[in-house]
Image 1 (cartoon, rainbow, N blue to C red):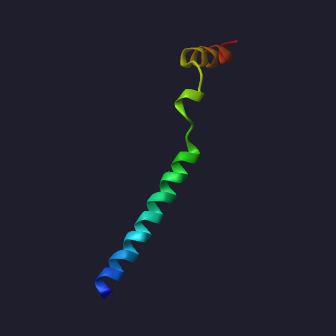
Image 2 (cartoon, helix red, strand yellow):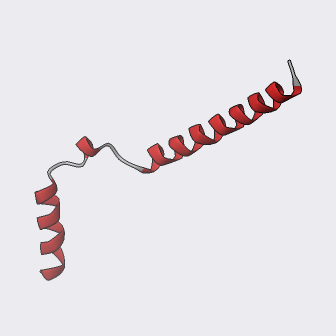
Image 3 (tube, rainbow, N blue to C red):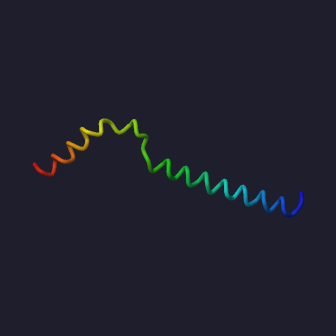
Length: 52
């Protein structure tokens, strides 16, 4: 391999590792929208609780 190809390959691997880490981190911190339940019920419960 030429020196330029080795450098390009190393940078590509590093870039892909960073992208995979960031996407894994984001996916760990968020929840699936379908697992949240009914939005109107959650909002009404949260609004009513402090007033009581």
